Image (cartoon, rainbow, N blue to C red):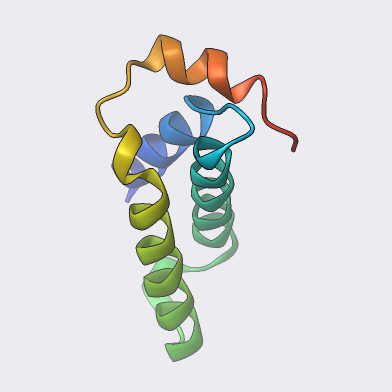
Length: 82
């Protein structure tokens, strides 16, 4: 679980340019916030559904940026509106 959170934080911290990559950042942020707000040991059905939906959304929106360098992602993240 901690590895997942670290990966999500890194992904969140490593993208943007007020285009599709900003959508990727926002979906990563949403997933990370959900993980931070729940008790992984006692997931409700609604939590499970929400996590599944957020993961799918993030995967779709971030697919094109999987191989982008961390440096470039950080630069582009700076252009996104929060």
